Image 1 (cartoon, rainbow, N blue to C red):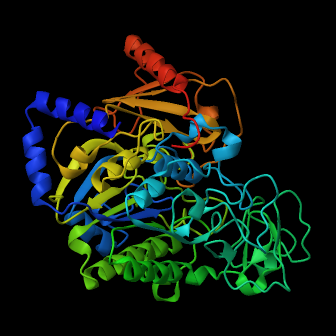
Image 2 (image 1 turned 90 degrees about the vertical axis):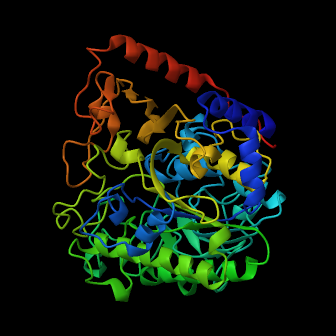
Image 3 (image 1 turned 45 degrees about the vertical axis):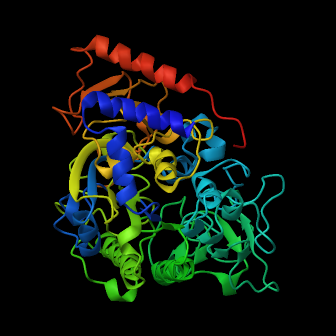
Length: 529
């Protein structure tokens, strides 16, 4: 299957006169055979939140240097505008909306693993190809088999290790969801078994205070959804009792990710490695570590983005120190677009000023507009990638096929049905779009389709109450409330998606509607390889 993909790409490139099979082989022979891979994923970071993408109110020197030394994509896409579906897609190569929303929606902290053990994932394929694989930081893909409730007091499986990771040091879901603990491989870190962990998302069984009853204990006020058990002065989604010795401290989360990531690099340096780093910033609750408190005019959201930049910089410095940077492919991106208010009254919206988190694009997290799904995407591999800016379309769902190709790992279209091998795009071997379309997924399984310069969003008959993203009340969190009729945008002339041109181009809308229906009918892959 891999040879078929390669033949298809070679035929496309040959027709364009851009490169030939002989040139490919010559380039590969002269360059390092396989890269180490460090894949860093921020959480709710917008296209306009980095200096290299135009931010002036937030300082991100480490990531700006990364962009200057590699390729910076201006049309990089998260497959979904929320976290779990994007992470599912980037590890499996399959759009998450092909699965049930219950399975791959925004998962609670006690949800079962949403990737079937035994399925050929990107990390598993790399592991089979001789890579040491590690996952550090945010997981949010579920734990346990779903047959029995996950028991955080004993061996927790299946999890990251059952879908391709040799080592994992993760938090189960998001920092605003219980349980607020670290899990190393199969066990909670620092757990005292005489104080067992109990978790519930339906009712408050705990004897510990919650945010609704004791707002006087809160460091940040929260809405009702985020007013569950108070841990470290912050109320969470869900209820938790026990595990006090194991609970993380928000102001130490980022330093912990850095420490564990550098340790993994030091231990894996003598063989090819794949390290996934799931950063927490700037997802809520936003808590700055002491060195970053008061460092941004935008308040805590600006502070945690600068904290995120420091974390990425520390990992990059470790690669330099270990002599690994030249042959390491570092990819930095975000799981979806930004949002200002998302449950905690931390002043992010009030202090945002003229900063544009989405880089002037329309929409926030949860939606299917460009601001919700178009994200920073930077790739640096000094041995193979020349510094440049690219307008080519690149979706995170393409990472399995693309990285598999570069690493010599076998990942078939059966295992990763929506993933395309865009290695020629990544390496700059073509200036054309090898991906001519991408599907974008929003809350309640709303879909949109981009084909070339055109963007189509179907109408929906359902209506729901809206909740704004903070600074722009015209953008509703629940996308159904906006679309009483289908929308068609020309992104070349209207990148901010302000003018619905469906009346002028009904045939184009009908064409995209048919194509989206065809893509949706594409069957999901069977389990296994």
